[in-house]
Image 1 (cartoon, rainbow, N blue to C red):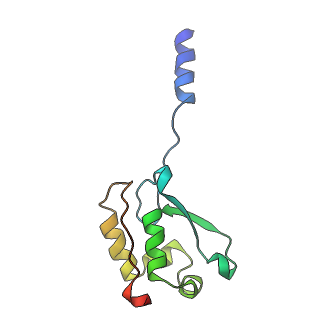
Image 2 (image 1 turned 30 degrees about the vertical axis):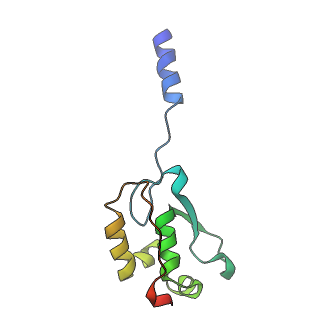
Length: 109
């Protein structure tokens, strides 16, 4: 009887499955989670998607609020863009907690 009680207690303490970034398909550590408004909040967007901080910052480095609203309001649409695909191919090889400074794209300057 005591053994069964310990097994129940062990399952009670199990950590939940890690959330997976829909952009790069890596687990998102708790300290690297960002909520991305698929349609920018300033444009009336309410729906969010949890992403790695580095993935989220890359999106905003590449696209204006207008572009995000009109063309890139879904993860699938983002993944169709060449620069995002290149970024995802690069970052997918990094550990889940990897972070690097994001530089604004020349395209947006």
